[in-house]
Amino acid sequence: TMVFLRTSLNGTAPIFSEQDNPASFAKSQYTRVLTYLYLAVFSLLQLLCPSTLSYDWQLGSLPLVTRCTDTRNIITAVAAAAAVGLLLAAKKATMKKPLVFSLLFLVLPFIPASNIFFPVGFVAAERTLYIPSIGYCLLVALGFQRIVSHLNKNQNCKYLAVLVLGLVLVISSARLVTRNTVWASRETLFRSGLSSTPNNGKVFYNYGNFLRDQERKEEARICYKEALRLWPSYVIALNNLATVTDNETDIENLLLKALHLDSGHTTALFNLADLYRQQSLCAKSKFYFSLCLSYPDCLPEAHTLIAQCSSEVTFTNSLKIDTRTIPLKM
Image (cartoon, rainbow, N blue to C red; front, top):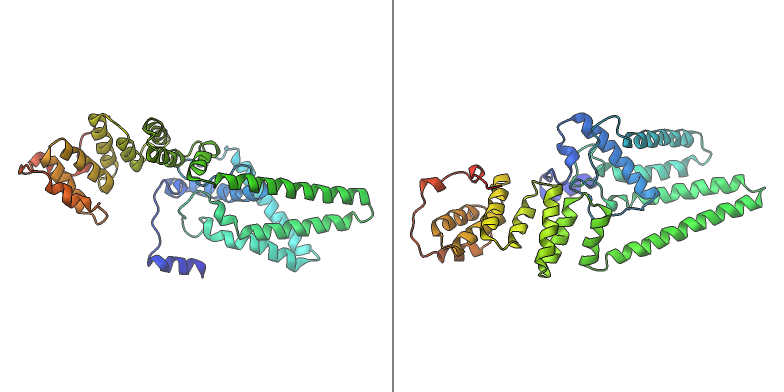
């Protein structure tokens, strides 16, 4: 029901790109299946031990599982065996209803985010574990109750079990408090991603945006370049790198490369047109402004800027080509 209602808000199923969920775009079904299975186990591990948390898990945060020899498959197999064990325990348990309820609360809310029925727009997301965590806590409580019931005759072991549980609660609470500090500001949040998911191009892109807004162009340039190293086809990173670059030739090359990757990227079209306008290359400027205005999400300032070109030079045949065929200076 929730899936149906969420889909009906947009009228159609949402469309995702490769950077949102690389596994869904993998050519090999074998790779997709192994990766999907591991991602489910990864989410379970986040419940068991949330040592590494990140506000974003896109763009290479978790490499695809492409081979059966990948050691992560061992973790997946162990988790599958544990799941079978829990199911068998639920079948034989004296408190069957609470155990089954806990397992259902753990598994069912996570299914829409598991890629089983349809691809989702993320690699992993801690927000998908909010409701499953209730089932997990119930399982821990049931397990602890079972342990204590077996230790009634051994008070020392019983006190030790209570002490261990209390220690886990204290450590978890401390982790919660320290994690909350990450969300104190935009800077602390974006900077935290650099250490938690260093292979994620998007966290470098986001931090680069923050640095650019603070007029720290040199640092922003470094972040954008690192984002592009990790994800070479990151079009918006190419566009934003151009905005913190001083050399006009380099700016032009970056924007042309962005359009080579995505000929309909309106921000790159607008920026390239505005660059040509500032260089008094009115024919080129009008051409790219016209391309930009052919898309509904083009910036409205394009109408004003295109009128500022005083030259009446007509478009030449050399400009009447698809932007995807423009030769780039790499």
